[in-house]
Image (cartoon, rainbow, N blue to C red; front, side, top):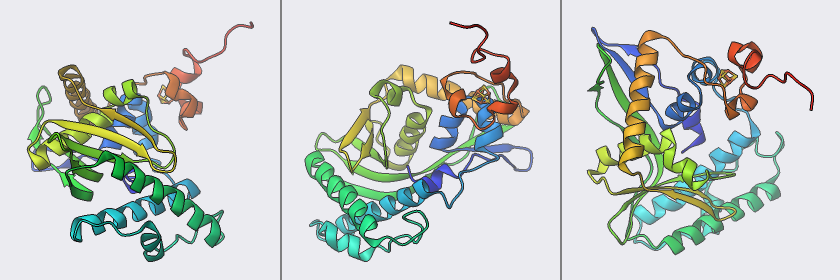
Amino acid sequence: MTIAQAASSPRPHEGHDTLVVTITPTGAQAYGQCPLHFAEVFQKQPPHLANRAIERGKYLHALVQRYNRALIEGDGSPLAPDEVIARVPVPRAFSDGADDETAAITYACEQLYGYKAWLDEADFAAILGAEQYVRTPARRVTGVEGAAVVFSGRIDLVALGRDNKLVLADVKASSVLAPDTLQAAPSTFVYRHLGVWAYGNDDIDIVQVVPATGQTARAHLIPDNIEAGTTLCRAMVASIAAQSFPPRPGEYCAYCAYAPECPAFAGGATLVTSAF
Ligand code: SF4
């Protein structure tokens, strides 16, 4: 998933008498971690666009997109990574706000040569799409009167494996999820939903890859995961329709910007009450 997508959030908008909720992979992921965090942080305080990590992520995706487009639009022979790097402008705020051409080129080489190595090893039968934006039609939501849901998101790479499986790849700048976590992640469910709608193929693998390190994780959703994702997305629509976002304290509290104000955090499981 792209960094730009992380800044987007599902926002309800009123039709004539239907509330239409748009669910993105990152929105579903945030809601799955904690509905109150989703409402108070994800929807109200999107990541600051000048953030250095975000600039790096945007640069990585620009490089990968240029490389993939050459594969899709050309004769199938890839551009040399050096050629791609020369064609993609280096973001101004790449290195602590100062232009640092050497650091940028080193970063770009690590990422793009790593991406090429992953792609070569994956040996896909075809690359079908790059940075592809998918938006499903609105559908009524079971159990939520007067509401409809739209799924939308940008997929970094869509490829067809030699086993005819559709592969949706999410290119990451730093780390991938553990396989069990990826398997159960709400974002994985949403990506799969987008792939089924856009390509009519429900034999889908979701892959995360960090090009610089070669780290990957892969998930193929089983019926239990699909049912759990469906239940979560219905609950998310119901929450948004009712504007009711219950806190769900857990490991994510440690990273939550709303923690100082959150009653569940201040009085709950994470409060230290005794000495060791
Ligand atoms: S502190 Fe924890 S329970 Fe409270 S909003 Fe944040 S993630 Fe949710």
